[in-house]
Image (cartoon, rainbow, N blue to C red; front, side, top):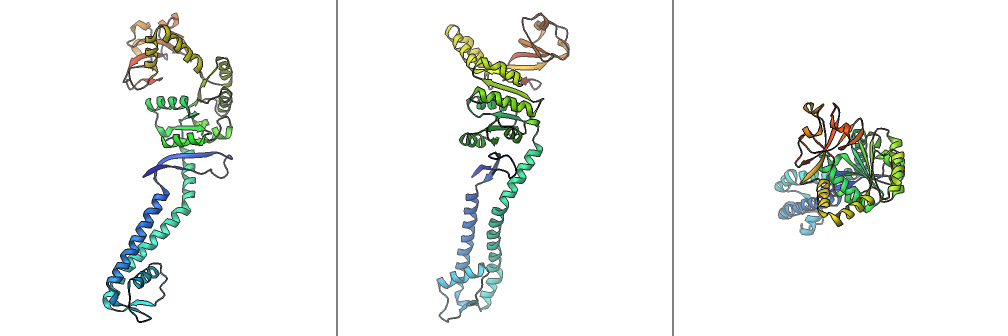
Length: 355
């Protein structure tokens, strides 16, 4: 019975910000129930031992020891109360107390004290784990928004080999956070437009930020905030309306995807050439078929044209700029160029996938 554990807000951090670390752990209710069952088992076993040897015990009122007296003696003995009104007097009863009841008393106390200490120290342990995560996290990807776009982006990241522990999800919806937590991601609760929330997600040390919020205004504010926290992080943003794309680029986004226009183009193509849409969908699917890939130019390809490249090339990346296939500059490859090409999956180890 395992589930990820919710970490309470850390004192001294931004108000309303909660961080969740995914980890496999036993449910507290299950752990306590298991220990209680073990304690009652010890109690019942001891009652049985005392009752079977009841002739070796003496009650102060002189009427002998029955089952109730055995249970009474067991409870006061295991709890170390020890009133002394019932006591072992035979050699066998005393030997049983030495070899059986005393070890069971110690085990019973360990269970009770251990459960209490675990409850008392749980909060401190969670705070230490959270501080350790903050100090160690590096080169991770922060995904702002865990809706349809955010989930799709994470599936691609996982398909490319990004470990789940290097993905941090930022969202304000608690139900959505539970889903992300259950999927094994570190989650920061709060609006991605707030600098303290993105600071808690360690954007300053991230390698990329994916902005997949539902509203364009939130996307713009998130981009501005992320760029303010880090001048070097790569920011990719999804936006609904094309008229807002230039605002995002001015805000510091490295790449902007206009979701509504992209969907519209695909719908238009599907009316006249549905097979083209199938190919595009295949390129955008990361688990099978064709894939869009980015790789460095090989030594033997330098100075040659695109027709001498084994993989079909769509564009050349040179000095941070994309040169289309039809541009004459793309037909003389240089050292340091990168090629955006198409290749069938599975990809070779030296290739960095774009999808």
